[in-house]
Length: 464
Image (cartoon, rainbow, N blue to C red; front, top):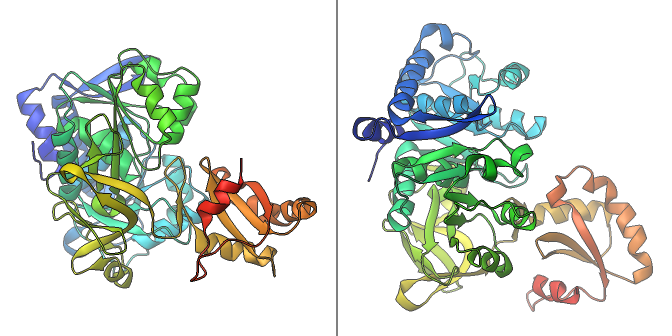
Protein backbone atom coordinates (compact mmCIF):
# COMPACT_ATOMS: atom_id res chain seq x y z
CA UNK A 1 0.00 0.00 0.00
CA UNK A 2 1.36 3.42 -0.97
CA UNK A 3 1.27 6.20 1.60
CA UNK A 4 2.27 9.84 1.29
CA UNK A 5 2.80 10.51 4.99
CA UNK A 6 3.30 8.75 8.30
CA UNK A 7 -0.14 9.83 9.53
CA UNK A 8 -1.76 8.46 6.39
CA UNK A 9 0.00 5.16 7.04
CA UNK A 10 -1.03 4.82 10.69
CA UNK A 11 -4.49 6.23 9.98
CA UNK A 12 -5.14 3.66 7.26
CA UNK A 13 -4.64 0.75 9.64
CA UNK A 14 -6.27 2.56 12.56
CA UNK A 15 -9.45 2.56 10.48
CA UNK A 16 -9.21 -0.95 8.99
CA UNK A 17 -7.49 -2.98 11.72
CA UNK A 18 -7.83 -0.72 14.77
CA UNK A 19 -7.10 -3.38 17.37
CA UNK A 20 -4.04 -4.88 15.65
CA UNK A 21 -0.74 -4.13 17.41
CA UNK A 22 1.30 -1.39 15.77
CA UNK A 23 4.08 -1.18 18.35
CA UNK A 24 5.30 -3.73 20.87
CA UNK A 25 7.50 -2.54 23.73
CA UNK A 26 8.74 -3.33 27.21
CA UNK A 27 6.98 -1.85 30.20
CA UNK A 28 7.57 -2.92 33.77
CA UNK A 29 9.45 -6.00 32.65
CA UNK A 30 6.58 -7.25 30.46
CA UNK A 31 5.80 -7.11 26.74
CA UNK A 32 3.09 -4.54 26.00
CA UNK A 33 1.37 -3.59 22.76
CA UNK A 34 -0.12 -0.38 21.38
CA UNK A 35 -2.86 -0.86 18.78
CA UNK A 36 -2.93 1.04 15.50
CA UNK A 37 -5.96 2.97 16.75
CA UNK A 38 -4.28 3.99 20.00
CA UNK A 39 -0.97 4.71 18.24
CA UNK A 40 -2.61 6.96 15.65
CA UNK A 41 -4.49 8.74 18.42
CA UNK A 42 -1.30 9.37 20.41
CA UNK A 43 0.39 10.81 17.33
CA UNK A 44 -2.52 13.22 16.76
CA UNK A 45 -2.54 14.32 20.39
CA UNK A 46 1.22 14.80 20.53
CA UNK A 47 1.19 16.80 17.31
CA UNK A 48 -1.30 19.21 18.83
CA UNK A 49 0.85 19.51 21.94
CA UNK A 50 3.89 20.32 19.83
CA UNK A 51 1.96 23.02 18.01
CA UNK A 52 0.64 24.59 21.17
CA UNK A 53 2.13 27.83 22.42
CA UNK A 54 3.09 26.31 25.77
CA UNK A 55 5.34 23.62 24.28
CA UNK A 56 6.72 25.79 21.49
CA UNK A 57 7.70 28.40 24.01
CA UNK A 58 10.31 26.02 25.43
CA UNK A 59 12.51 26.50 22.38
CA UNK A 60 15.04 29.31 22.17
CA UNK A 61 14.59 30.12 18.49
CA UNK A 62 11.97 32.03 16.56
CA UNK A 63 9.56 30.26 14.28
CA UNK A 64 10.55 29.83 10.67
CA UNK A 65 8.47 30.59 7.58
CA UNK A 66 4.75 29.92 7.99
CA UNK A 67 5.29 28.82 11.58
CA UNK A 68 7.64 25.94 10.72
CA UNK A 69 9.92 24.87 13.54
CA UNK A 70 12.96 22.64 13.45
CA UNK A 71 12.90 19.93 16.11
CA UNK A 72 15.92 17.86 17.06
CA UNK A 73 14.95 14.39 18.29
CA UNK A 74 17.38 12.25 20.27
CA UNK A 75 16.62 8.79 18.91
CA UNK A 76 16.50 6.68 22.05
CA UNK A 77 14.21 4.15 20.35
CA UNK A 78 11.57 4.40 23.08
CA UNK A 79 7.83 4.56 22.52
CA UNK A 80 7.80 8.28 23.30
CA UNK A 81 10.65 8.85 20.84
CA UNK A 82 8.76 7.12 18.01
CA UNK A 83 5.60 9.10 18.79
CA UNK A 84 7.60 12.36 18.87
CA UNK A 85 9.11 11.74 15.43
CA UNK A 86 5.81 10.92 13.76
CA UNK A 87 3.99 13.70 15.62
CA UNK A 88 6.59 16.33 14.67
CA UNK A 89 6.06 15.36 11.04
CA UNK A 90 2.28 15.60 11.43
CA UNK A 91 2.70 19.02 13.06
CA UNK A 92 4.48 20.20 9.93
CA UNK A 93 7.89 20.71 11.50
CA UNK A 94 11.31 20.14 10.05
CA UNK A 95 13.28 17.73 12.20
CA UNK A 96 16.76 16.33 12.57
CA UNK A 97 17.27 12.85 14.00
CA UNK A 98 20.17 12.73 16.45
CA UNK A 99 22.21 9.90 17.93
CA UNK A 100 22.14 10.21 21.73
CA UNK A 101 25.38 8.17 21.90
CA UNK A 102 27.31 10.55 19.62
CA UNK A 103 30.11 12.73 20.93
CA UNK A 104 29.30 16.17 22.33
CA UNK A 105 31.28 17.76 19.51
CA UNK A 106 29.31 15.95 16.83
CA UNK A 107 25.94 16.72 18.42
CA UNK A 108 26.79 20.42 18.72
CA UNK A 109 27.76 20.46 15.05
CA UNK A 110 24.62 18.69 13.89
CA UNK A 111 22.24 20.74 16.03
CA UNK A 112 23.84 23.93 14.76
CA UNK A 113 23.81 22.91 11.12
CA UNK A 114 20.17 21.80 11.18
CA UNK A 115 18.86 25.02 12.69
CA UNK A 116 17.05 23.13 15.45
CA UNK A 117 15.25 25.38 17.95
CA UNK A 118 13.75 22.68 20.18
CA UNK A 119 15.00 19.30 21.41
CA UNK A 120 12.96 16.20 22.23
CA UNK A 121 13.55 12.57 23.14
CA UNK A 122 15.77 12.88 26.21
CA UNK A 123 15.16 15.61 28.79
CA UNK A 124 18.70 15.52 30.19
CA UNK A 125 20.31 15.81 26.76
CA UNK A 126 17.82 18.49 25.73
CA UNK A 127 18.86 20.59 28.70
CA UNK A 128 22.57 19.94 28.13
CA UNK A 129 22.50 21.06 24.49
CA UNK A 130 19.89 23.82 24.74
CA UNK A 131 22.53 26.53 24.40
CA UNK A 132 23.35 25.30 20.88
CA UNK A 133 19.83 25.78 19.54
CA UNK A 134 19.19 28.28 16.77
CA UNK A 135 19.23 31.84 18.10
CA UNK A 136 16.02 33.85 17.95
CA UNK A 137 15.75 35.98 14.85
CA UNK A 138 18.13 33.89 12.76
CA UNK A 139 16.72 33.16 9.30
CA UNK A 140 16.81 29.37 8.99
CA UNK A 141 16.37 27.16 5.93
CA UNK A 142 13.23 25.33 7.03
CA UNK A 143 10.65 23.25 5.19
CA UNK A 144 7.59 21.55 6.60
CA UNK A 145 7.94 17.77 6.70
CA UNK A 146 11.66 17.76 5.94
CA UNK A 147 13.65 15.17 7.90
CA UNK A 148 17.43 15.36 8.14
CA UNK A 149 19.51 12.20 8.42
CA UNK A 150 23.26 12.38 8.80
CA UNK A 151 25.25 9.93 6.74
CA UNK A 152 27.16 7.44 8.88
CA UNK A 153 30.64 8.80 8.32
CA UNK A 154 33.33 10.45 10.41
CA UNK A 155 32.67 13.87 11.89
CA UNK A 156 34.06 16.02 9.10
CA UNK A 157 32.63 13.93 6.28
CA UNK A 158 29.11 13.18 7.49
CA UNK A 159 26.52 15.22 5.60
CA UNK A 160 22.94 16.07 6.43
CA UNK A 161 20.70 14.47 3.83
CA UNK A 162 17.32 16.15 3.39
CA UNK A 163 14.51 13.60 3.01
CA UNK A 164 10.74 13.84 3.43
CA UNK A 165 7.83 11.83 4.75
CA UNK A 166 6.85 11.06 1.17
CA UNK A 167 10.31 9.81 0.17
CA UNK A 168 10.61 7.61 3.26
CA UNK A 169 7.10 6.20 2.77
CA UNK A 170 7.95 5.50 -0.88
CA UNK A 171 11.05 3.59 0.18
CA UNK A 172 8.99 1.54 2.65
CA UNK A 173 6.51 0.74 -0.11
CA UNK A 174 9.26 -0.34 -2.48
CA UNK A 175 10.74 -2.71 0.07
CA UNK A 176 7.38 -4.03 1.19
CA UNK A 177 6.23 -4.71 -2.34
CA UNK A 178 9.24 -6.98 -2.93
CA UNK A 179 9.41 -8.44 0.56
CA UNK A 180 5.95 -8.14 2.14
CA UNK A 181 5.24 -8.76 5.78
CA UNK A 182 2.03 -10.35 7.04
CA UNK A 183 -0.11 -8.42 9.56
CA UNK A 184 0.68 -11.19 12.04
CA UNK A 185 4.43 -10.53 11.73
CA UNK A 186 6.45 -8.85 14.46
CA UNK A 187 9.65 -7.16 13.31
CA UNK A 188 12.24 -6.41 15.98
CA UNK A 189 13.76 -2.93 15.68
CA UNK A 190 17.36 -3.26 16.86
CA UNK A 191 18.90 -0.52 14.70
CA UNK A 192 19.09 3.20 15.54
CA UNK A 193 16.28 5.37 14.16
CA UNK A 194 18.70 8.17 13.30
CA UNK A 195 20.09 5.95 10.51
CA UNK A 196 17.81 5.66 7.51
CA UNK A 197 18.20 1.86 7.30
CA UNK A 198 16.89 1.49 10.83
CA UNK A 199 14.13 4.04 10.32
CA UNK A 200 12.76 2.60 7.09
CA UNK A 201 13.52 -1.11 7.46
CA UNK A 202 13.04 -1.29 11.22
CA UNK A 203 9.99 0.95 11.70
CA UNK A 204 8.23 1.97 8.48
CA UNK A 205 8.49 -1.40 6.73
CA UNK A 206 6.34 -3.28 9.27
CA UNK A 207 3.94 -0.36 9.82
CA UNK A 208 3.36 0.04 6.07
CA UNK A 209 2.36 -3.63 5.88
CA UNK A 210 0.05 -3.47 8.89
CA UNK A 211 2.48 -5.58 10.92
CA UNK A 212 3.94 -4.62 14.29
CA UNK A 213 7.31 -3.14 15.15
CA UNK A 214 8.87 -4.34 18.40
CA UNK A 215 10.95 -1.54 19.91
CA UNK A 216 14.26 -3.05 20.94
CA UNK A 217 15.76 -1.83 24.20
CA UNK A 218 19.15 -0.79 22.85
CA UNK A 219 22.68 -2.25 22.81
CA UNK A 220 22.54 -3.33 26.45
CA UNK A 221 19.76 -5.77 25.53
CA UNK A 222 21.13 -7.17 22.26
CA UNK A 223 21.72 -10.44 24.10
CA UNK A 224 18.14 -10.87 25.29
CA UNK A 225 15.79 -8.87 23.05
CA UNK A 226 15.23 -11.75 20.62
CA UNK A 227 14.09 -14.03 23.45
CA UNK A 228 12.06 -11.25 25.06
CA UNK A 229 10.08 -10.10 21.99
CA UNK A 230 10.03 -13.39 19.97
CA UNK A 231 10.05 -11.64 16.55
CA UNK A 232 9.23 -13.30 13.24
CA UNK A 233 11.40 -10.82 11.29
CA UNK A 234 14.39 -8.60 11.95
CA UNK A 235 16.61 -6.08 10.12
CA UNK A 236 20.32 -6.25 10.97
CA UNK A 237 23.76 -4.98 10.06
CA UNK A 238 26.41 -7.71 9.58
CA UNK A 239 28.23 -6.95 12.84
CA UNK A 240 25.09 -7.44 14.91
CA UNK A 241 24.19 -10.59 13.00
CA UNK A 242 27.61 -12.04 13.79
CA UNK A 243 27.09 -11.33 17.49
CA UNK A 244 23.66 -12.97 17.54
CA UNK A 245 24.89 -16.06 15.71
CA UNK A 246 28.02 -16.46 17.81
CA UNK A 247 25.97 -16.43 21.00
CA UNK A 248 23.08 -18.55 19.72
CA UNK A 249 20.51 -15.78 20.24
CA UNK A 250 18.16 -16.24 17.26
CA UNK A 251 14.68 -17.23 18.46
CA UNK A 252 12.69 -20.14 17.02
CA UNK A 253 9.88 -17.96 15.66
CA UNK A 254 12.22 -15.99 13.39
CA UNK A 255 11.42 -16.66 9.71
CA UNK A 256 12.82 -13.65 7.83
CA UNK A 257 16.00 -11.60 8.10
CA UNK A 258 16.97 -8.48 6.15
CA UNK A 259 20.68 -7.65 6.16
CA UNK A 260 22.04 -4.31 4.96
CA UNK A 261 24.35 -1.32 5.48
CA UNK A 262 27.56 -3.25 4.87
CA UNK A 263 29.19 -6.27 3.24
CA UNK A 264 28.07 -9.52 4.87
CA UNK A 265 30.43 -12.52 4.90
CA UNK A 266 28.94 -15.56 3.11
CA UNK A 267 29.54 -17.72 6.18
CA UNK A 268 27.07 -15.65 8.20
CA UNK A 269 24.40 -15.92 5.53
CA UNK A 270 24.91 -19.70 5.28
CA UNK A 271 24.59 -20.03 9.04
CA UNK A 272 21.25 -18.23 9.01
CA UNK A 273 19.89 -20.22 6.07
CA UNK A 274 20.94 -23.46 7.76
CA UNK A 275 18.49 -22.55 10.53
CA UNK A 276 15.65 -22.40 8.00
CA UNK A 277 15.43 -18.61 8.11
CA UNK A 278 14.89 -16.73 4.86
CA UNK A 279 17.67 -14.22 4.23
CA UNK A 280 17.41 -11.13 2.07
CA UNK A 281 20.30 -8.75 1.48
CA UNK A 282 19.45 -5.10 0.87
CA UNK A 283 21.30 -2.35 -0.96
CA UNK A 284 20.47 1.31 -0.46
CA UNK A 285 21.73 4.76 0.40
CA UNK A 286 20.76 7.53 2.78
CA UNK A 287 20.42 9.69 -0.34
CA UNK A 288 17.66 7.41 -1.68
CA UNK A 289 15.77 7.05 1.61
CA UNK A 290 17.29 3.59 2.10
CA UNK A 291 16.52 0.60 -0.10
CA UNK A 292 17.17 0.39 -3.84
CA UNK A 293 17.37 -3.36 -4.34
CA UNK A 294 16.75 -6.59 -2.44
CA UNK A 295 17.75 -10.20 -2.97
CA UNK A 296 14.69 -12.43 -3.34
CA UNK A 297 16.03 -15.79 -4.49
CA UNK A 298 18.58 -18.33 -3.32
CA UNK A 299 21.53 -16.09 -4.20
CA UNK A 300 21.67 -13.35 -1.51
CA UNK A 301 23.94 -11.24 -3.70
CA UNK A 302 21.63 -11.16 -6.76
CA UNK A 303 19.55 -8.06 -6.12
CA UNK A 304 16.17 -7.20 -7.62
CA UNK A 305 15.76 -3.47 -8.18
CA UNK A 306 12.82 -1.86 -6.35
CA UNK A 307 9.73 -1.04 -8.47
CA UNK A 308 10.06 2.76 -8.55
CA UNK A 309 13.83 2.83 -9.04
CA UNK A 310 16.08 2.64 -12.06
CA UNK A 311 19.73 1.59 -12.09
CA UNK A 312 22.37 1.66 -14.81
CA UNK A 313 26.08 0.99 -14.85
CA UNK A 314 28.40 3.77 -16.05
CA UNK A 315 31.32 3.09 -18.37
CA UNK A 316 33.71 2.87 -15.40
CA UNK A 317 31.46 0.40 -13.57
CA UNK A 318 29.86 2.87 -11.15
CA UNK A 319 26.24 2.24 -10.18
CA UNK A 320 24.00 5.14 -11.20
CA UNK A 321 20.51 5.57 -9.77
CA UNK A 322 17.27 7.35 -10.56
CA UNK A 323 14.67 7.08 -7.81
CA UNK A 324 12.04 9.81 -8.35
CA UNK A 325 9.88 8.91 -5.38
CA UNK A 326 12.55 8.29 -2.76
CA UNK A 327 15.44 10.54 -3.86
CA UNK A 328 16.79 13.13 -1.42
CA UNK A 329 16.03 16.82 -1.82
CA UNK A 330 19.78 17.29 -1.56
CA UNK A 331 22.53 17.72 1.00
CA UNK A 332 21.21 20.24 3.48
CA UNK A 333 22.59 23.74 2.92
CA UNK A 334 25.23 22.37 0.54
CA UNK A 335 24.10 22.92 -3.06
CA UNK A 336 27.61 22.41 -4.43
CA UNK A 337 27.89 18.93 -2.93
CA UNK A 338 24.39 18.15 -4.17
CA UNK A 339 25.29 19.16 -7.70
CA UNK A 340 28.46 17.05 -7.62
CA UNK A 341 26.45 13.99 -6.57
CA UNK A 342 24.47 13.90 -9.84
CA UNK A 343 25.29 13.43 -13.50
CA UNK A 344 22.51 14.17 -16.00
CA UNK A 345 19.90 13.49 -13.34
CA UNK A 346 21.48 10.22 -12.16
CA UNK A 347 22.84 9.88 -8.62
CA UNK A 348 26.42 8.67 -8.61
CA UNK A 349 26.55 6.10 -5.81
CA UNK A 350 30.31 5.57 -5.60
CA UNK A 351 29.63 1.81 -5.69
CA UNK A 352 30.72 -0.54 -8.44
CA UNK A 353 28.44 -3.21 -9.84
CA UNK A 354 27.12 -5.09 -12.81
CA UNK A 355 23.70 -6.03 -14.11
CA UNK A 356 23.29 -9.69 -14.95
CA UNK A 357 20.63 -12.23 -15.76
CA UNK A 358 17.06 -11.03 -15.33
CA UNK A 359 18.23 -7.46 -14.75
CA UNK A 360 19.51 -8.29 -11.29
CA UNK A 361 22.22 -6.19 -9.72
CA UNK A 362 25.50 -7.42 -8.22
CA UNK A 363 27.62 -5.12 -6.04
CA UNK A 364 31.30 -5.66 -6.84
CA UNK A 365 33.08 -2.99 -4.80
CA UNK A 366 33.57 0.68 -4.00
CA UNK A 367 34.68 3.39 -6.37
CA UNK A 368 35.16 6.01 -3.68
CA UNK A 369 37.88 5.74 -1.11
CA UNK A 370 35.52 4.67 1.64
CA UNK A 371 35.52 1.67 3.93
CA UNK A 372 32.10 0.46 5.06
CA UNK A 373 32.56 -1.24 8.42
CA UNK A 374 30.42 -4.24 9.46
CA UNK A 375 28.20 -1.94 11.57
CA UNK A 376 27.47 0.27 8.56
CA UNK A 377 29.78 3.13 9.57
CA UNK A 378 31.71 4.71 6.72
CA UNK A 379 35.40 5.56 7.10
CA UNK A 380 36.59 8.21 4.64
CA UNK A 381 40.13 7.26 3.72
CA UNK A 382 41.49 10.65 2.54
CA UNK A 383 40.50 12.18 5.87
CA UNK A 384 41.83 9.26 7.92
CA UNK A 385 45.12 9.06 6.01
CA UNK A 386 45.62 12.83 6.29
CA UNK A 387 45.54 12.47 10.07
CA UNK A 388 47.96 9.54 9.92
CA UNK A 389 50.37 11.51 7.76
CA UNK A 390 50.85 13.94 10.64
CA UNK A 391 52.21 11.18 12.88
CA UNK A 392 53.89 9.12 10.17
CA UNK A 393 55.63 11.99 8.44
CA UNK A 394 57.82 10.81 5.57
CA UNK A 395 56.58 7.21 5.72
CA UNK A 396 54.89 5.47 2.80
CA UNK A 397 51.71 3.92 4.17
CA UNK A 398 48.13 3.01 3.30
CA UNK A 399 44.98 1.77 4.99
CA UNK A 400 43.21 -1.41 3.98
CA UNK A 401 40.45 -3.61 5.34
CA UNK A 402 40.72 -7.24 6.37
CA UNK A 403 37.88 -9.28 7.89
CA UNK A 404 35.89 -6.13 8.59
CA UNK A 405 38.71 -4.38 10.48
CA UNK A 406 40.80 -1.32 9.59
CA UNK A 407 44.47 -2.23 9.04
CA UNK A 408 47.58 -0.14 8.35
CA UNK A 409 50.35 -1.05 5.95
CA UNK A 410 53.68 0.76 6.31
CA UNK A 411 56.71 0.39 4.10
CA UNK A 412 59.52 -0.78 6.35
CA UNK A 413 60.99 -3.64 8.35
CA UNK A 414 59.33 -5.78 10.98
CA UNK A 415 61.55 -4.31 13.69
CA UNK A 416 59.84 -0.94 13.22
CA UNK A 417 56.33 -2.22 14.01
CA UNK A 418 56.37 -1.34 17.72
CA UNK A 419 57.50 2.21 16.97
CA UNK A 420 54.69 2.65 14.41
CA UNK A 421 52.11 1.34 16.89
CA UNK A 422 53.33 3.77 19.52
CA UNK A 423 53.22 6.70 17.06
CA UNK A 424 49.60 6.13 16.03
CA UNK A 425 48.29 5.32 19.54
CA UNK A 426 47.33 8.93 20.49
CA UNK A 427 45.27 9.25 17.29
CA UNK A 428 43.58 5.89 17.87
CA UNK A 429 42.38 7.05 21.30
CA UNK A 430 40.37 9.83 19.60
CA UNK A 431 38.52 7.46 17.25
CA UNK A 432 35.53 5.17 17.86
CA UNK A 433 36.63 1.62 18.61
CA UNK A 434 35.38 0.22 15.31
CA UNK A 435 37.47 2.73 13.33
CA UNK A 436 40.73 2.08 15.18
CA UNK A 437 43.59 0.24 13.45
CA UNK A 438 43.51 -3.42 14.44
CA UNK A 439 46.64 -4.65 12.66
CA UNK A 440 49.87 -3.16 11.34
CA UNK A 441 51.50 -4.75 8.32
CA UNK A 442 55.16 -3.91 7.72
CA UNK A 443 55.79 -4.51 4.05
CA UNK A 444 57.98 -3.55 1.11
CA UNK A 445 56.85 -0.86 -1.29
CA UNK A 446 53.13 -0.07 -1.01
CA UNK A 447 51.53 -1.63 -4.14
CA UNK A 448 50.06 0.98 -6.46
CA UNK A 449 48.48 1.17 -9.90
CA UNK A 450 50.07 2.93 -12.84
CA UNK A 451 48.15 6.07 -11.85
CA UNK A 452 49.42 5.93 -8.27
CA UNK A 453 46.33 4.55 -6.54
CA UNK A 454 46.89 2.07 -3.73
CA UNK A 455 46.01 -1.54 -4.55
CA UNK A 456 44.36 -2.12 -1.18
CA UNK A 457 43.12 -5.57 -2.11
CA UNK A 458 46.72 -6.66 -2.65
CA UNK A 459 47.62 -5.55 0.88
CA UNK A 460 44.70 -7.51 2.29
CA UNK A 461 46.01 -10.63 0.53
CA UNK A 462 49.36 -10.29 2.34
CA UNK A 463 47.62 -10.86 5.68
CA UNK A 464 46.91 -14.47 6.57
